[in-house]
Length: 317
Image (cartoon, rainbow, N blue to C red):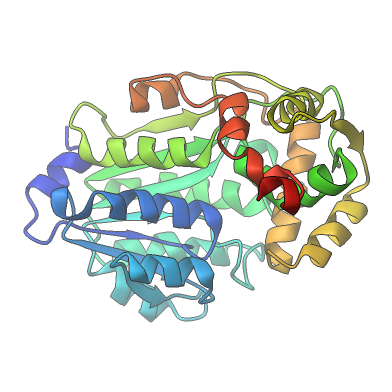
């Protein structure tokens, strides 16, 4: 059976492309691949819809950056044609994301470009999320992948739980109000992972022969509620942090004021929180631990490592 590692071993160009690198998940995957330099890849291509700080950082690290949009399939095919393997991260920053099956252009282009290996990053239980506008296209993409998977030598579907790094967007709540306010039921459990772990696990899947193509369900090592998370934040910042459930409109207004993510990403994050409340992201597996060969980072360790981000600026300094 072909593996992603075997594809790269037999290639003279050893080239990989990651889409949606103007979003945090795509950026983290590309950054992890770039960290290993020429060891496994000669060229790392990163696609983006809107050039931003994340793309500038990847450029400095030596990535080949290319603009890609659903409206310009030829540019996607041209970019894909330079890669042995393409990692498709859902394009939440693309203005057409969420409208019908347009998102599948990112998959069909891989067939047209003759890509050897394809990885689709999605969410756990995507088939149950069709009522959530910004998550519904994930199911459409997965259905398309099933229809075209025989066109590639190697295909993997990577289902993710909740990226706990999203807490960074709510650091001002914690630092100034001593609260964590989100639109999620207090009793809703989920198994959050750390983005750096997931990115490294994906890198291992691409480069280690022992990992065959298939479906990988990535979760963290513990099931928590956001009340539990607030308690762990309390320990990290040495200040009691309360959890408060607020409305989706309130959290969207908060994110608009922060100005750190675009409109589509705000809606995407809102749908993620709804999915948590609906218990669609409560499954837990050991797939990420297998890819890492060690236990994934706990929320407590993540918060301790990044505690300065959740403190008032004077205290952090």
